[in-house]
Image 1 (cartoon, rainbow, N blue to C red):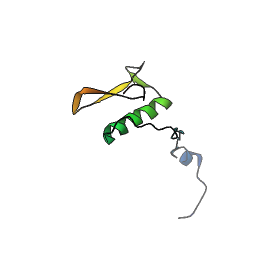
Image 2: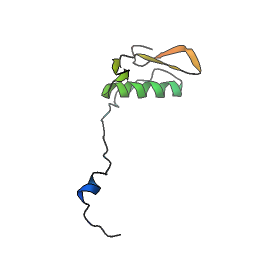
Image 3: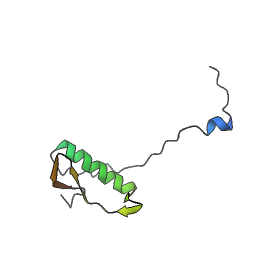
Image 4: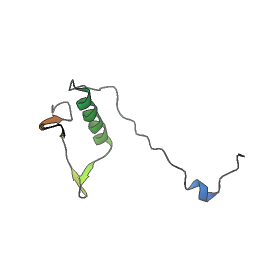
Length: 81
């Protein structure tokens, strides 16, 4: 293929990559279970760049449950295990 300049219509279909810097210096591991810790860390990082909503309203969350143990609630932030 030859490298010809793209037309404006072709340029509109180009994907864009968005990057957010997440702090990695002070990673605190709270749980020994790798699955629980992965979910906790993901949610903690997600909540530093955005918000979760329910029916269009922001929802403040501080924990989560896994479907295989619905009685256990895990805290997301280090001060809330």
